Image 1 (cartoon, rainbow, N blue to C red):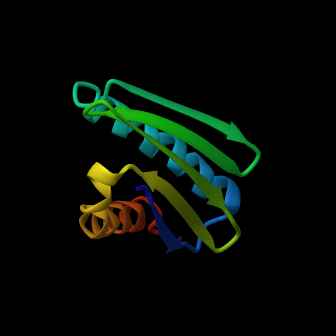
Image 2 (cartoon, rainbow, N blue to C red):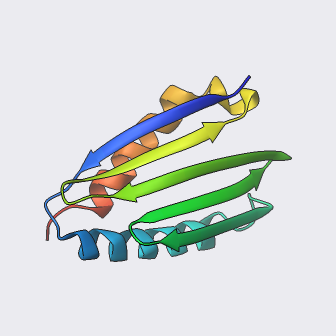
Length: 103
């Protein structure tokens, strides 16, 4: 039984700047957690990033849409991670807000 986690993070950046920050954040994420994930793939198509990652033998897929006022994230969590959805949501919200702060 999978669960889709949805998070919307508002921003006051241009769409392009928000996307550039996300690309940098994804690169940092990959470096920081390289030893914990078996595989991480991301692919951008316009303002949408599709991604897959493998953790503890489980496959996780998701989508990130960058709009003029928010970054919308949907992550399809396998059952083993679904029970941690609220904790994951809080961490994603906090990290995303920090990443997209207007400086």
